[in-house]
Length: 438
Image 1 (spheres, rainbow, N blue to C red):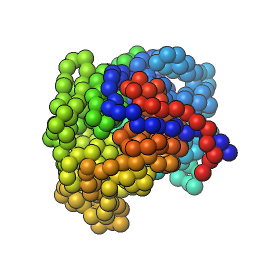
Image 2 (image 1 turned 180 degrees about the vertical axis):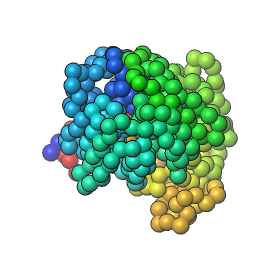
Image 3 (image 1 turned 135 degrees about the vertical axis):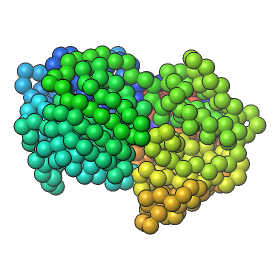
Image 4 (image 1 turned 60 degrees about the vertical axis):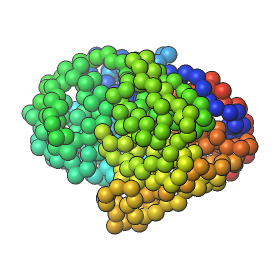
C-alpha cells in the first residue's frame, strides 16, 4: 500500500516568520465544552489540524452540529443527543473520555470507546472514572469502553493524586452543571486548562481558581453559548524557535504570548541563545553557538513534556553533554531510535538523571537521556511514531547532511497547523512523495 512521505533536503539555516494558531490541546476541549451550552458557541483562531476534524466527526455522531470555516468553529446543540460515541472512534485520540461528563448532563447516560492518542505511556482513565463515581455516577469500564449513567451529578470534594490535565478537564466539565459545589485539590493549572475554565465561565459557569492547585466550581442550572479566541500553541511556538536554532538560523514566531513560554525561553537563554521578545513576536538565534544543559520536564509552570522532543534535537547541536529527565510520561522517549538513526548521539536510562527522583524512579521506564553534542547528523529513512516525534525528526532532517525520507507524516499533520507549508516558507527544501508502506 502506498502512503505519503516527506522528502527533506537540508537547505541551510531556516529563517522567516511563522504565525501560530490556537493549540491542538486546547481547541478540541473547547469543542467538547461547547456541547454544554443551550445555544451556539464559536471558537476562533482554531488550527487546521487533524484533531479538529476527528472531534467534529465525534460531535456530529452525537447529534451536535459543527461547522468549520477558515479558523472558526461553530458548535450548536442538535434536537436530540445520542449518548453513545461510536466504536469507530476507538483509539483515535483521548477526547472521548472527556465527553462522559457532558453526555451525562445532556442524556443521563454515556458510552465512550477507549482512549487513544500518541503511544507515549499509559493514560489511565482511573482518575476520570473515580471522579465521576464520587459525583454520583455509576461507571463500568470494559474492554471496549466506559459506560456511565447518572440522573444528576452532585458536587463533591476531590483530590487528584497527580495533576492530570485530562482529569482536571473532565472534572471541570462535569462540575459546572452538577448540583452544589465541587472543590478540586491537586488540579492541573496548564494554560490550556485555565483557558478552558475561562471559556466555561463565559458560558455562565461559576469557577474560582484558588492558590495551591485548588479549583472551586459552583454548579449552575444551565450554560449558554459563548464565543472565544484561542491563544497561540506554546508547543508549536517553541518547536519553530528550536527549528531556527538547530539550523543556525532564526525564526520569528507570532501569535503566542510570552507568558506561555516563560520556562522555555529561559532554558534557551541558558543554552546561549539570544532571545528577542516583543509584543508582536518571539525569536531566538545563537550566533556564538549553543552549550549543553540539564532539563527536567514537569507539570506547568515547569518545562513542558511536549517541549522536550525539539529540545532533544537542539541538544545534539549544543557543545557538550546534555541531560533530559522526563517526569510526566514514562514512555515519552519512544522517538529516540528514529533520531539515533539520523546520527543523534543519545543514550536512554531507567534512572532519574538531571533532577530529583520522580515517580518513575523505581520502575523500568526509560525516562532519562544523555545527549552528546555537537553530533553530525545524516539523512535517513525513518518512520514517525507520534506527533511530537514527527516534528523532531523534521528538525533533525533539516540539520542533517543528505536527504531524509520521513514516513508517518499524518502524525505531524494531526497536531500542527499546516507544517509542510510553514517549513517550506522558512526555506526548507521539502516535497511530498508516495512511498511503499513499510
